[in-house]
Picture (tube, rainbow over the protein chains, first blue to last red):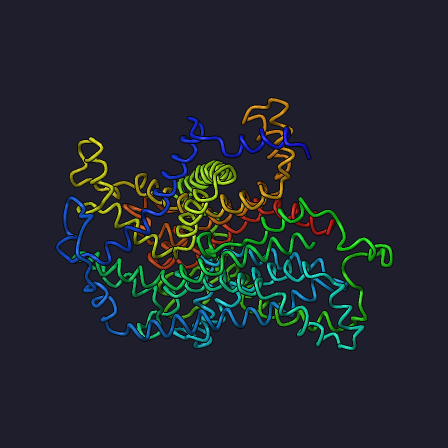
Length: 288
Length: 340
């Protein structure tokens, strides 16, 4: 290739500070600040001593303290909430992965009567307005003595995340070339072995991103637990988040500490997985 | 749920846009040679027999028991008189369509319906416009700035809904909120102890800001991912033809990402329309029930006012409205399914 065509291109990509470039970057910077500010404010408030939270003019420079965290984690039943949240979330996600893996494999790879109908059902279920069904759920749980029950809550969360899990995993499975599976079968694997040894490892990014979204859903759930689990012993961390706001006023420091702790697992997992998940998706798309 | 956007919440099906993106750039077939050998379809028609049914059975069964059955019960409840008394004595009193006729002739119900529809429309329009803008910007930024912006978008996206509602209430706190301070600093008077939750309208504005803040990252980051699948040659060509930014967007970007826009818009409509935690946790639908949207209205009528039957009827009507909106979305996806 001749250098004459190369040069203008290069010049264009590293164009120095024109008004357009400055405006572009400035907009991006402002947007970044706007989007990150609530997260930053939550975190910084959580580290402020009480008297620096209760000020009309916010304090930006302060000596961090963990007193809010001590208050937040020191409440009655904190560890029960943690246990319950972990149990329902992990239980729901694992169950959903297991059930969805089977279903999505069938949908992505097999031809059978009613396949399209099942796809439609999964789509419909994905749109289910769970929040508006709390009353029916309450009646059913009450009739079956399942109020204040962790297993019941787990099952509900499981079905909440199931359609989405099937839908997404199906996409990931479809992205794995059938040839790989066939090659394994030619080499003497059974269908099941081919799945375990060839497809499953390739699905890792898909499994991670689907379980992340399932995790967020279940971790976040609010309406069901509010309605079905009124006993404090059977509640989750969402209840704990509201514990520091009473009729007598709010302990904002402790609330922000609790919010930070509540968000932390999701933030960490999200940042850690995001690249892999997206990378996996694009890889899948490129492979076709 | 509520994988609702941020999260559940709703969390957030990456699926649909991802698929859309994948589709737009991937023509058919894995490998050419294979295509010759096996001209049928990508999907194997294997000696399946019962196997696929066994594989989908657990999923279908659990959805039938835990989703379909409650849905049916919900419809049944909507035809019953079920207030506090019947609730405690566990009586079943059938009253036909009374709950529905009461609701449909109640002006409060219609106020809430109109409010929900307008709220959803404004919200989704803002989310799509800003999200698209930010996505386009991401595509044109340098590497470093892009990382900074996408990182902050991800942080906003990953924040759990309940935590973000709590944080927004703190930002807009009457006494110690940073927003009041900011308004004062910018020179606006009257923000000494401004109560942002004083009216239903202002409460809804705060919820709107929260929803836009939480939903834009999903649209923007997926938009950016989808944009990278549009060949840069197309841009170059448009630029050479002297097309303006708008022109390039409408004649190059938009047609290429049409299915991305369609699917994302519909997902957002559904998520925003049925958003519960954000609205309820912000101010319990108050003040004076002035910030209730349909799901919150149903919850407060039922749980707060002990009108369980009426609440069930509200939720049935909500579902009917959702289905009306969704039917379009379904047709879209089913069409894609055929092309698979």
